[in-house]
Length: 413
Image (cartoon, rainbow, N blue to C red; front, side, top):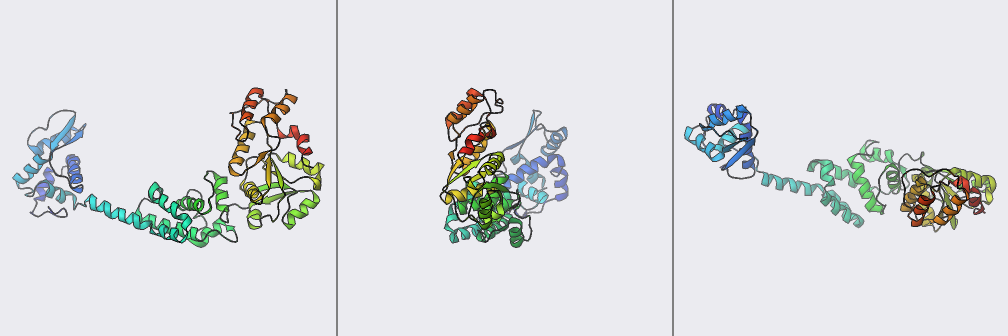
């Protein structure tokens, strides 16, 4: 029958008294769902743990008790027969359901139409991939991984969202670099459009990784670096790195001539990359080492970069640039579990070789100070020297950079 309307007239007043009882809503709902799926209205449907009113309404509908078990079971073909014989709905249960609940939309065609709408929503990303072939695999992945569907919810919302993503990626990399909020305001009319956690930022960052080959990661610093990789600076002044005797800009050259430390911001590093690089650049974890190098060696000190703990976006930007320009990076940090974690985090982002930072160096330093502070915390791996973790477990002494300062300073001239 036509699922948008009934053919024979339905006695709606009697129908609503009989089948329109709220206690039978579950039965009408089951019948409607079968119509939506183009399934026959025959066979049993069951309701677990029915209320007494639901049993009473089913008995009144069928003219007999449907049983007293833990569930209530009604055969749809019996309901159809009752409705036809009583004259309430000459076309049976299907017509009655339409009269009570309105036209039925078949799920098969509806789903096909929705899927076509989803495919059309991705068209703007496909067009972008045609312009930028490096994005082809990313565009295919977006279609298959379900991320867009989860973020957008509907094809209409997805089409608008992906249009914004395509607009952002088409305008990258930014040259010269610009503030991320300014970029968002210009493109989308709001400075916070690309804030962390927004669907637009999530998808744009995934496209940036495909565009630049930027490594996967997570966390605020990773996102800051990822944006910076395409010239978008987020909080560009608060991310800094401490250096000594690096050269390559007028300011750095001036400070190196004076033998004084420099603080470089992410903004400076992205907008004015260092033009020259020393063949070897050492890296330390603690600013005490860099300050001592400036005090003892001044302008004669070898180039030094200080992480000041976990590597910032500015530090990683600088070190990547130095590596790309051919500098060998040598790293030293605290011999403790936190130090190993910092060093491993850096090694996952930038290649470096150990600077007196191996199991042999730790054993020598720890044995020279057996009364040093005890090692505490959860063990961590040392990606550059697997023996280092075992050495720390055996000797269980913490060796900070400051305790081997004389040895480190001897390498800086």
